[in-house]
Image (cartoon, rainbow, N blue to C red):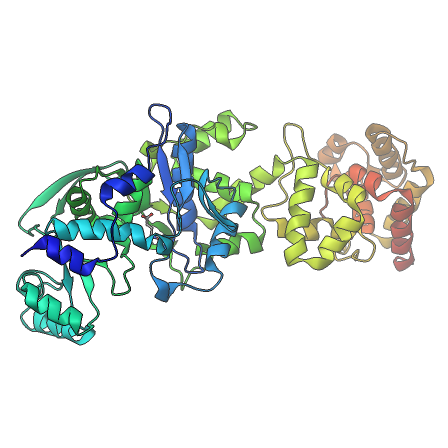
Length: 549
Ligand code: GLU
């Protein structure tokens, strides 16, 4: 076969050589050891937790090493593409603060290794496709869908392996006349790789997460270019990651079975393959067994889920760090206030088998993360969330900024901050009683207390309350009210002989709490009253007294 003639016949429009293209993609000048990696998602409209896991892993590796992270949109599968999906993708990665140094943006490309959308790179792939034809490593195949499915049926009947290989690869060694005739007839064709691999042979390979692997060679003549001239993932991967100087490919381990083919391609093209990190799947417990998170069954696989539920970005990030690096939690315990980026992420601490997603753990981590936020930060987070998901809350918060901040400041800061919120949606039920239009008495006084005592305690409290009192004076006054009514002011005395009292100062505080907050549980009453102000506190106590008449 005259491969030069064939290459010209198939790619008459291609005039550039691989060398010309190489010259357009010079290496980056980066420090020794700098990692270059990428996120290469397909715009299917569905951005999932796995994308984020992969993105964070790449991001940490690149930026910790002084390298470069870029975003490449893998839009070669037009059938799966959904309108607006690229924007959704870029926006959600931005929301999760994955910072790209280069790549596709909503406004176009940023960087000199573009285009960063694969469909726009067709001319580049064609140069390398032509080269493979020239080298005798690729050939056109004119099989129709029916012919391919017929091959499949016959393979089934013969109990043979499936795929286009060996005797089934009917266009692999066809003479030039046949090819010319098919082209002249205007038949659609795909370009196939001429595999020289055999199932008898194994390749050894070291994956940075999975370790040493032994994989069977690829013997299939896979498609490199589809009939519309757009490459398959495999071919685009080899060409792009070579030209874009990717040093490390981080991707899901569903790609492991095609790795032997990818390595063949790199070799055929004369490219040095990158290092690979194949990440195990995200799993969850289903009864007693583990299973992969599924798009159909598990809403928590979608990134939109976390935003809607009100998990701050920092919580999801921190949670994923605990999942990805086994030593992260120890680090966090030792450095409770350090910025998460100070943690030295290492792919060596990743579990080759994948990670277990645990919703309860996520909530726990989130509680800690939110408890460490400053008042301004939590205010910002919750208003931003409410803007999209709870308009009424948003209005209350933005119309009463200073007031809301004083509420959110209760128990914040200090060594043991309150941990009331796992998600931003928890904020409203926590603080609704601070707003008169939301305030309602939802808990009732325990039946063992006498209404007259409750009423007397509430009245007694109002007689001496002074908003200017400090916490000790305030509490001493409550103790005095308790004492006057036969409730123990001293808890120790009460514990020693509860039968000598009607109750304790804790019960008197509870009388106030139910009147002022409407519930049996609330944040610190002194702080609550300070924030509510004397007028509101009294109005509520008076309203409660009315009901006790
Ligand atoms: N487009 C591929 C995917 O979405 C990318 C895999 C890779 O990172 O190479 O699965």
